[in-house]
Amino acid sequence: MKNLFKLEILETNKTLTLEEQNDFRLKFKPLLKIAGIQSLCLEQNELYIEFDPIMFNKASFKHILNEMAFPLKLNKILV
Image (cartoon, rainbow, N blue to C red):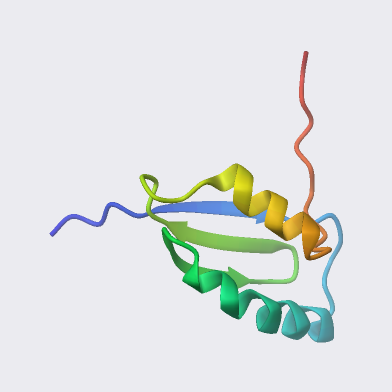
């Protein structure tokens, strides 16, 4: 069976300490119940999200991360 999940890598705007990583991992546990999320993996500078592209809304998820005070690196918007 073909794997239809996609991977998104979000960068942090700072390097997270081990303590910060552990704190965010605990905060992320309830997020695994969001429809479409298959897995989350946090490293020092990146958050890996494996998701179902049909069920998952990236913009809403980024909004949730911002509300959790996750140091998400914002992409520059070119006009």
